[in-house]
Image (cartoon, rainbow, N blue to C red; front, top):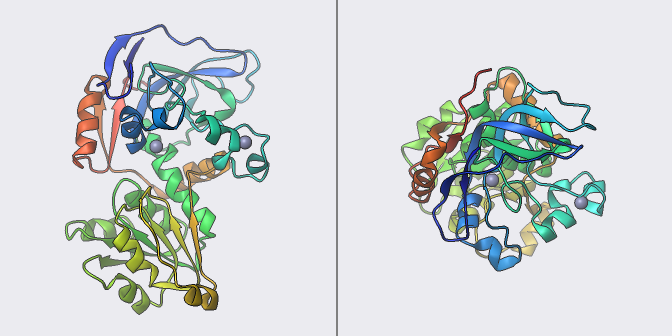
Length: 345
Ligand SMILES: [Zn+2]
Ligand SMILES: [Zn+2]
């Protein structure tokens, strides 16, 4: 089969002919029809993983995988060849305290070993990928492969942030950043019934934010984000998808009493918190990473029912290095998706 292989960190990927992966009794082989390209893939190429331990190379990256089940192992009962399906890529252990608490996204085992499809195990930048069947789910009717793929990481990350914040339909939620995560977040929050505020530094994205489901748009210029949010009555939930720490600090001032600020984008910096405000308003600041398989199933249903669709550009597998360059140059609106096999169903 054809695959884009990362021989080692720092190298461009090479399109190679490699053996089709074998499957065990509890695995499935997925014929990949779409694989989203995530910023994490760039971190992988840049050697970030190598600095914290595992050296998985040579590796086939790609963890936003949607396709068709080609083969199933002898012990697999919930999938059949021909099923349209996608892959939950974070291979949680199922038995640590976090997994047992229903929060497998912070699985102690998976965190310690980075046990994940497309990160330390071969992923979806290939015609086929072999994965444990327990991590593979059908794609609902109405979602095509390219539209589904980015939901498995980008979409799940924002949906998980909303879940962790306890977002519900009586809430006002502000989403900081209208990019790969934020443009999905606006649609998802709207589908969840919340009042949605988009915060963006880009004039050009203001109309787009409204089209995607924002009821209000706040232009993140200067120091008035918190004041603007307060003008609306404050945000019950603020989800940050940006790397702009100044904007996060500003937005935090617009958090309502009992409000939750969720950091879902990997921003680096320090967040000053005035304990007096936080005590008297009983506010929370939390981190959020991905989501669980249950969250993913909910999100897929939500996406099918409310026409949540990523804005994306598709590319053949051969153009993988070009897509990575576009992503580095901030030229992708808003998700690049590789198509290793053209879909027939
Ligand atoms: Zn990702
Ligand atoms: Zn676990």
